Image (cartoon, rainbow, N blue to C red; front, side):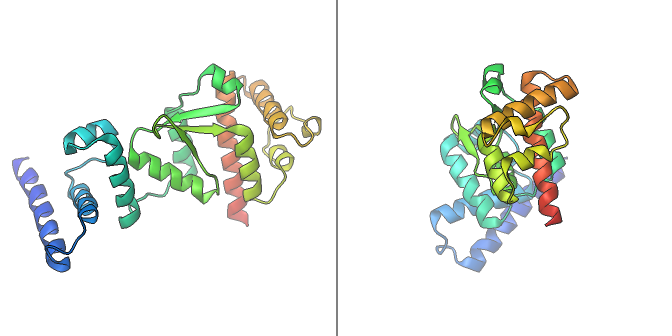
Length: 223
């Protein structure tokens, strides 16, 4: 165990020395050097970036907001942002769902983000679907506004919102009653999901988000 710890620090030290030797000991700008050290510490196994931002900030002795910026730059600079499959995205939403009954009735789904790595990974998944995320509470919560989500994902696959809803395979739904209103289409879909799967309001709104992304993912694959 002790030898493993020593080898971890040895690897980190060697990696730092190699970077400084290649670039020059006074050639790397301060911020780039900091994110390089973060990257090397993660690679060596000295930092677990899945830990909460407060745990990492305390360990590194920086403020959480400064850490967020450094990690974001590191992920972008070194290309460390992971690809997220639809299955993992769905599992993540279900495990971190913070949607209240009131928020669900307002056609919103709220999901907690526990680390900057998690946020960057999810943000990349949403960007791949041409969806601009809406964060709140210092970027610790991701909020899906269902009518806006429906509009954005419909545009991603060049479909009308009513067409996208009608192709979700949800029973007990007649989009003709909604006209061109995204809000009414969402209401119909949530009501149909509740009836079809005997779900409460919060569960139905969450499943609608996942069903929309799954449908769009399948359409994008076929295009």
